[in-house]
Image 1: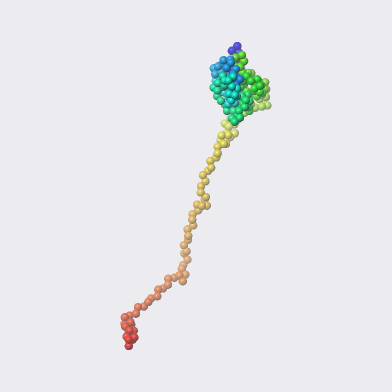
Image 2: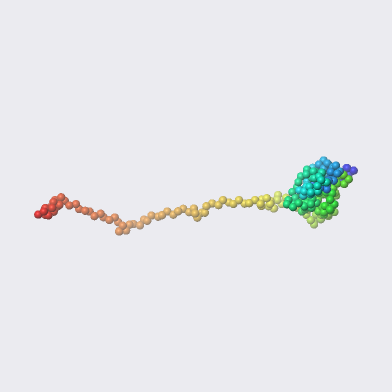
Length: 249
């Protein structure tokens, strides 16, 4: 019976791997109902899930699931301890927490780009997950972990992709990567980089050489010629004495 379950799991995993790019480590989102069922069935999730899926796994949950388990009180204390040991993934409900089922459903929106598995015992959540193509669903039945087969919506989506009517998220990612490698699409990280401003030099007009003052080379006019000094003639001593004698006589 165990070998048959693993064969089915291997077949379903191959389907999701080939059509939706699901890969190891398998990220499994747990809600409170799945943790409670594992506790009651004495299932060691960290040991049995890798063996069942034949690959590396990561047990994950969200803050909303932990918050919900805290509010439910002592009845789900054991389930809360299991969830607290899981990796906490960021959800879009940082300020206002929502129910665990609503939170997990939001984590697989827009094509389930992170390739999450959803592990739950909630029937309403299971029905909603099956309506989203490419989301592997897990549950516990008779103390045994089961990977559900691909939903009809998922199979119809794959057939539409094969017929060329749709393009899967996995193929979109591959096409985008090929375009970036060929240089046909600019890498978004390069577009976000701010261009450095070029250091501008000084204004060329401000660097013009100052004009030297030209000396006036015009010949001086006649009025600007040096004035001749007047020569003062010195009188002789004899003339001075004669003048004094005449004054006395």
